[in-house]
Length: 256
Image (cartoon, rainbow, N blue to C red; front, side, top):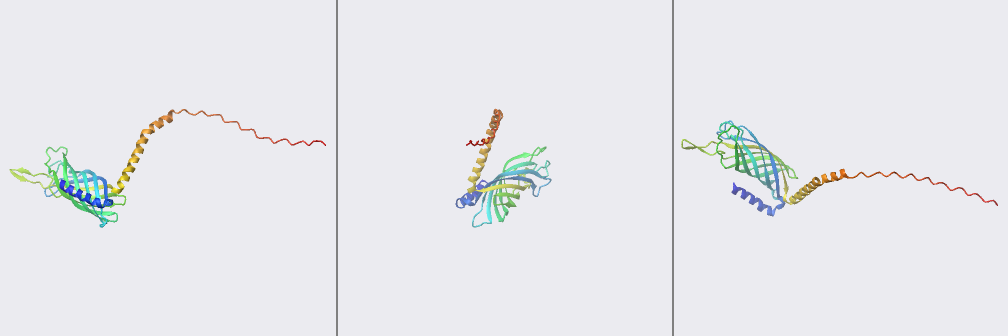
């Protein structure tokens, strides 16, 4: 998985040096439901979870309808079963790295590609005494579709599943036995990405907004305190209105 991630990242980095204006970076998060599928899957109840992380999208000028998007996502998987069905009987937290080829049709896109997953932790479901042992790595695929407008907002559905078994093989009577269970996940997500040329202005705007908000939070109490304790100005009596001007007396003619 590490080699695949480094290869994908290197390809995007090399392409971005010549077509930097087409490289977009962003964040995404969403909810998902998961369970176990496979030949031996029985009584694997759906588990609700979530996912989130970063994404990098490259869209070359000579192929305007196509793009490559790679992501690094923290994803909650597993199932909600408490009895051996066989089932997973645990919540499984993964680092997922999908590398997806996307086709854009106006604001709609379709995507598909491989996915590499690293198990971060496992938590047994309540009342489960001994969950199975899980493989530290898994490989699979992802397919989906969604909407992305010119501002970089993404909304989409995605299905991803493993092609390798989730659990490790066990020995029964000295013989290895492999239970065939694989992760299956349906995701609904919201994302936002911006071009690398716009990243500086976006960060600057965000920094300005945060600075103004912090200044308001710090200074507002002092302004309120000063206003509250400011002495009320005394009102001065209004000046009496000026007397109206009198007309001059008419001149008396002198006797001849």
